Image 1 (cartoon, rainbow, N blue to C red):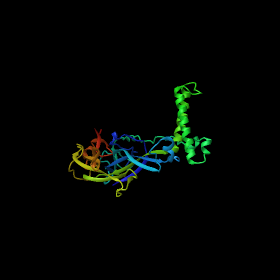
Image 2 (cartoon, one colour):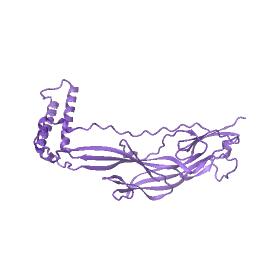
Image 3 (cartoon, rainbow, N blue to C red):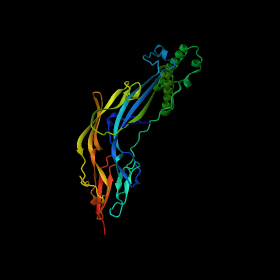
Image 4 (tube, one colour):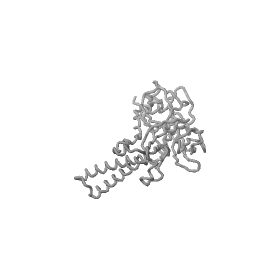
Length: 354
């Protein structure tokens, strides 16, 4: 099972390759409920770099001694980081209806927006949403023609225009040098004025250089690939990536393959409130919990391991009913579930006052 979602986000370091998290949920009352499966989100940060040649790129070496200036448009992509997190999704094979009647002390069942159980006889506080990545504000692009003099604009040829533009760049550099040395004809009165004048000259130089060097625009995009691992596997194709095209279809050989390995570590969370081998009866409370199993997911590219993470997944464990005595007439039991794994995180019991 795989899905894709895109959004713009900030660049983050590869050092935070993997983490586990949940999303905020609205808690509602529900008659029936689902136990969750554990889904895994791979958040891939991709940087897109688009280069456009300048109008005077052919004259860059002649007048500015600049070599290797781009003369054709070029777009490239690179992966900045990959983060892995887990979340719960409804397991449609595990839907239950609790016994809310006079024979049981069940007064409420809280579920999230997807119908996944979050609590029984308990007030549940939805987890805080993870802080999202926000795109860094981009500076306004410079229009080089706004900084051209009348002589440059009226030049009779591109070569003459390039020559005059280059001379203007050299004049700007000379003005900056004189200001820094305190030798300009009109020196600023204080440091703030000096800073403003130098910033203005730097802006003019940058804009004019664009005519020779061209422009480079970088954007960072997050693509999220979601899987629900069902069994151990040595090699599962997760995505393909190309430096020229970015993420490609899984059957597009233009992209290099990235794989995952899923290992079942055969370790299950224990819970004394659940009952192994219990038989269903007429007075069952129908309150179930997952005992998730521990797995390890490794992301790799051919022979290069990119990172791994161990965590608990509901579908690699087992599902058991909770002891019916917990919800009988003598005890009042409150439960809070882990929304990612369906395990009982906290359990409290108290004697029912007669």
